[in-house]
Length: 228
Image (tube, rainbow, N blue to C red):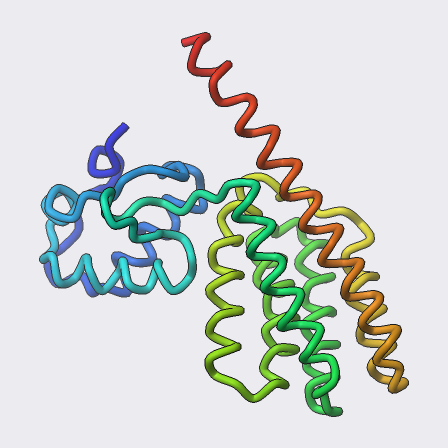
C-alpha cells in the first residue's frame, strides 16, 4: 500500500516536528513497512502540509535512521540487509572499543544510569524505550572520544539499526542488562581489558542475532508473496 494512503490529513499550521512525530509513529507501529517509498509530492498533499514542512520532518527521520535517501528511489523507510548489519556492527565495534580507553568517572556514572533505565524499561515491557536506553549507553561511551565526527558516524549506524531491531528483535534476551553492567563494573575498577572483552562479546552476540533474524525475514518474504 502507498504511504500516502495511510497518513491522515493534518492542519496546515502543523510543524515539521509534528509531522515527524506522526510519521515516526506510523513507522514504529509497522504501518509503514521497511522499504516503503515516501513520495514527497503525494505525501505532502495527503498530509495537507507544504513540501518544506514535509522535508523538515523527513530530515529528522533521516537523522534517526528511520528513513533513507536512495539516489534512484527517493526516500524510503529504512531496511537493512544481512550485509548491512555486519558493516554497521563492525563500525560500532571499532569506535566503541576505542572509546573504552577514554572514559572518566562522569562517563561511567552516566553509563550506569543508562543501564538502570534500560533495565526499568524492560521490566515495564516498553521495547521502544528499552532500545533508546540501550543506544544511549553506547552513545555516552562514544562521546568519551570527544570527536563529533566519530559520534556522528556512530549515531548514524545506530539509526540504521534502530528500525530493524524494533521490527525484528522486540524480545530482548535477559542477559543484555547484565552485559551492560559487566562493562560498567570493569571500567569502574579500571580493568579496560575486561571491559573490552565484555563489550566485544555483547556486540558480536547482538550482530549475530540480528543477522539471523534478517536472514529469516528475507527467506520468509518470497513465501508470503507466493501464498497471496
